[in-house]
Image 1 (cartoon, helix red, strand yellow):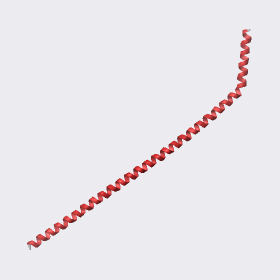
Image 2 (cartoon, rainbow, N blue to C red):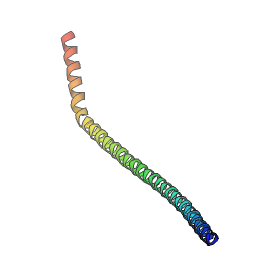
Image 3 (cartoon, rainbow, N blue to C red):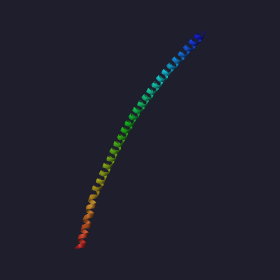
Length: 109
């Protein structure tokens, strides 16, 4: 009877050891799966961040180009306006210069 009890205890211990080994194997597998999933999430987040950075950079470049074109357009319009005002004042400026030169010549004579 003692042998049967000892054999039963030994069998139970072996069953527990097998169950513990199986649980340990499942735990390792779960940890590996979790690490793989974490790595995949990190890779996906990194890729999404890079795509977001590229998209925002492209938007910033487009906005800078748009502003640059607007500044050039505004500058050209202002320059054309100043040229036109200068042309309009040219006759008056020439007349004023001639009259002052005449006055200077008359004063010197």
